[in-house]
Image (cartoon, rainbow, N blue to C red; front, side):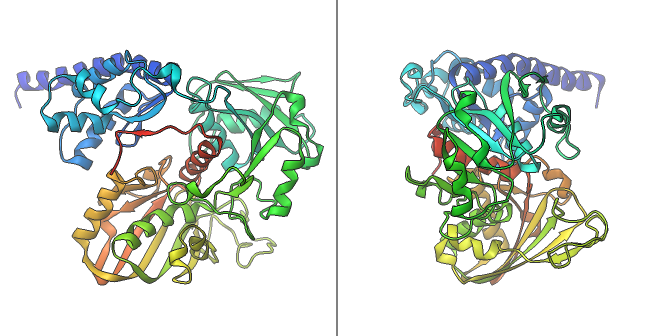
Length: 483
């Protein structure tokens, strides 16, 4: 390559950097002023660096087979920032590809047509006025990630609002609580700043005033004393998993509903967002977000069952170790879990296969399951060994799942990767419930084996937040509409 060609390539990169720098404040305006959540084929564009925005544009070539540059999307973002849009999730990547494929030249006319339902309707968006108060009961791995996501997703301030965190203790550990939110060995540093109000036992994270409440049981708490009312309590302790135990939260003043971040027992609805979240009614005051594994496998299983029919199958989970295991060999009430987690693969049980039927009744009794805990701190894999009712081959099956990941209503739940080089750490922070590894797919007639990666902490927490949004009716429509 000549010096002139090298200079041209470098100049193109610099020009694209300049466009991304111009785009960032426009994306911020859409988000904070209009509660418009921009993305690019499911990849968020909020609070992203110049390099990340450019990388997200390169991703389009992998999923659509066509180039989409920031020169294509910047005019769209400019136009949208002046359209007084009502709140919505807008996939700028899908709009950009559609605009290019249509061969149109008038960006404003195209957007006014594609976004007709929300153009000029910011003041009449019907968001209900008041934000939804949320309380985290517990502040462990899932609780802290939920806090990060809700702070990040605050938008203009009239969405989910994290008001309080309930922990055990005496009130002398605020520095440690703040440090655990600020630093994470798996997910990296908190994106922003965290201050401590020692006098009032509170954390201030990116301008969010979060009350820290010390209590040993829900009975001790009056949330209205802190100005919190009609709140949804997210119980991430796992201490109670049935209706009777979780109903204690409803006895606390200021609580309207409860969401459990673990599989619910008895008659509790186990919800996998994207599958059965619309079964949540106003009368459902206590619901479960099921497990991380159930969330990872149910969307893929539904996609397969809808198209090919599942006769029966087995789910094997290769799961990162969790906090309920021991660092070194010691007593544990569970079988095998007392053995050192960082030093062993530990065969254990999982209820995920049986739990599938709570979200997908059609698969009741058709699946078995087991689990192996392995010495990694995060990201797991589910291996779906399925016997189908219709025959298929690897190419057709992968293409079908790729389309489901990109264009179906489950595009927030199913992600798709087709690379021979990916490993578990590549999926840390992935916001989907599960990621289909196309290179590993096996298909032979009616017998298929699918490999699904999932961030059992972050991806699951994103699913929990989606349920929270639905329960509180602060969720927005997705545009353009998927088929």
